[in-house]
Image (cartoon, rainbow, N blue to C red; front, top):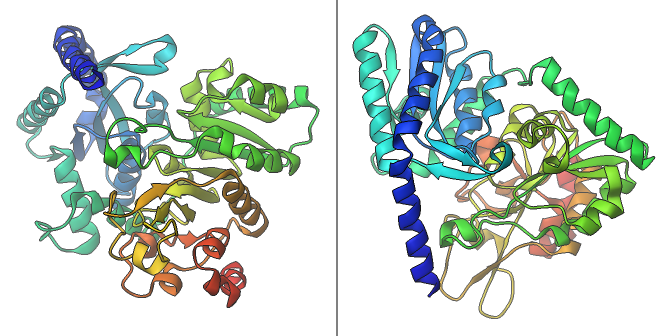
Amino acid sequence: MMRFRDALLSRGQILAGWLILPIVAIKVVSAVVRATGDLRRSDIIVVYENGGFGHLATVPDALRRLYPDRAVTLLFGAHPGRHNWYVSRLWQMPRVHLLPFGLALGRRGRFPGLMVPLPLQVRSCAWLASALRRLWPAKTIVDSAHEFQRLLRRQVSGRDDFADELLDNWPSYYLRLMNRRPAAPVRLPLELAAKVRAELDRARVSSGQPKRGLCCLYLRAKGASIDTNSGVRSGSDISEYVRAIRFLVSAGYQCVLIGDRRLPDDLAEEFSGRLVDARELASDPWLVSLFAATEADLFIGESGGGSWLPGVNGVPTLIMNSFPYYQTRYRATVCFKWWIDAAGQPVEPRRAFSELARSYLWDGCTVRASSGLEIEAAVRDFVAGHRRDSPYGARIEEIAGPGADSWFADAEARISPAWLRLAAPEAASDGEASRARAL
């Protein structure tokens, strides 16, 4: 019955996508018209037909590092409810314009909207790129997400023979680019940032608690019931974070909850203005979320698209429940989900970072998110040990050896000593945690 209901819902969404096509077509054409000035002045135009929020956070940053002295415009196929329209305000170059391939449902686009079927969206962007090429034949036109990813890998590595390489591995080249070509932090316009800052300050004053700093808390539920690859990447329930939140608040941090977990009423009452849900403030929740991710003093979150921007701005970052094991974020300290074997024991880290590194399922093994005690231990360790000017934790090579299959080397990321003490106590007892703190 559930499969029938899901299939019916999916067919209904596809039908609705076709029905809204005339309205969406007008909106997309209007967005392109508004972008005409930037398109005319650009040397390079990138048409990026599809991608989650992580793509919207990383592609503009990659373009400004690849072409620091060129005029670039990015046309990005976006969905209301999935993409944050304020992201376009972060960048002076490249110029970012979102093509609205959908209609928002719910107040201020808080809920997922109706979307044009993906094949038609991809084809529409191909037609658009072809038209731009005819209009400006002298410009460089990158006509798809796939071509942008090939361009990035070619520019960073000097190679173009990627036929057998996983497409999902292109972020490793982006992370390498971040190391090679540093760039300034990105900011919201002053008037927008001041609006959010004032609102957070008003909430904090009402709590009567001194403020040491701002902590962005990004919790991810997306995918929990969708499919294997997405579902096992969802994070811990917010109830598992309560112990860590109490510690952060006692340490003087005001926490802003972003992502797709909701703040229960009892927690909102307990923490008052010291823990606020971006969706409950008077400002647009999309604006508050983007401010928190780029302006926080600490970022503690899970490995969805919302965890890329803190690395762009050099915000000290602790990633919880990272999965699969090859993924990380720029200069982040990482705690992983747990591979549990048939005997109920955690899989040895060296194996997890090699043969299981890119696996979502493995015969005889299950995947478990972090418990409240594990999260609290990692947060306490990170708050005590992190530094803003360098990554904190253990190098992956010291744990997994030279054969580790991961983005860690390119990202200059580290493994949480608190996680390591649980995953490999023999390493921690040999002084691994103390060596990690000295890095």
